[in-house]
Length: 189
Image (cartoon, rainbow, N blue to C red; front, side, top):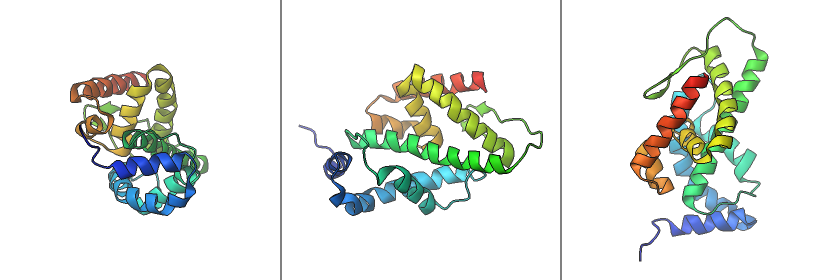
């Protein structure tokens, strides 16, 4: 019989998503270090998108999504997938707000490379993030698992090995879906 390395976290996530708000503070204390590590990696890559600290990004994620509950979380793996998408939406909202304040300077959007997404100049970075969000919505409709893997790798910064561990898929399955999603996005950018 195998044991879950974080059975308490999975149980707390299920209780919280079922409406038990009494464990909110304890749950936040448990997930904060994990979310902070993710936020640090994400903000390093998206430094032109949102002028936030890792803690501010986590609080945005918590205030906009997690605090309200209603997420149907089945496991910690499922939580990470949902958090990846939610973090993506926080950053896209910031990019849209900044784009609404600025007008074009003629820069072209960036492209994808084999290692992920490049960080171009600020305006095209914002435009690219918004375009990618729209494309991610389309990809979700075609292949939800592929879209989640792309979100976890690009928006949250998980390595493919970490995604395999979190999702329970093999490394080859994760790599195949990442490459499929990356190529799908490249073709449309």
